[in-house]
Amino acid sequence: MAKNITEKDIINNIKDLMSFLGIIVDENTKETPQRMVKALQEMCCGINKEKEIKDILSVTFPTKYTGMISQGAINIHSLCAHHLLPVIYDVFIGYIPKKRVIGFGKISKATALLGARPQNQEDFTQDIADTFKNNLKPYGIGVLVIGRHSCMFCRSNGVNHQNAFNITSAVRGSFRKNNATKEEFLNNINLSRGKQNI
Ligand SMILES: [Zn+2]
Image (cartoon, rainbow, N blue to C red; front, side, top):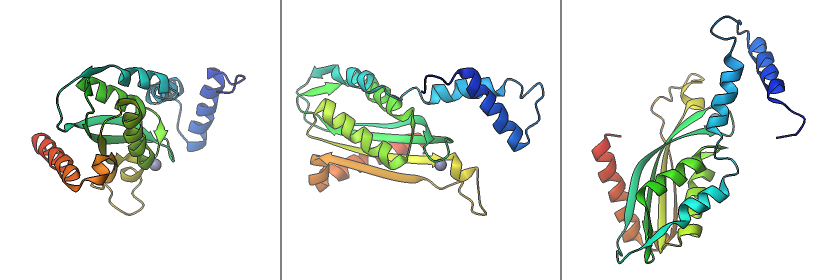
């Protein structure tokens, strides 16, 4: 953040924005600028957290397990880069470990930090795959992301986007090279989705 911009300036800017939109200041809206700053700060808490993410993914344990480890849906709240409006993601991650595994809880923790920043879904999907690949160094990794973007379903433009699920995927290492591995990952996702009715 530029040094000479204070939180007070930002709050005044939001007041101007609200006035521009015709929002009346009353008991409900008078503290809205402060609330909006706090909410956006929370939703952007993953910005510049590369070191924290690296630390989370650096705690690994030895294993004899040679199969695939899949997790999902990891429910992530994020912001779209284009409108700064909320996006809800279901993230599915699968990897084949190379002698070391990461704690299950750490997978979702690192993913949540990667999600807590404005970005487009395509980059988010690839960032998850590359971050896990570079830190965990597995034989392969697959990531599938299903996104519901409020900038779509809150702004209809005459089109009903209520059920528009945007799906992106990224595969690295053995997940890219081996079709059977890719299929196993997709089967695991379907098993998980069947349990959750999503
Ligand atoms: Zn958007």
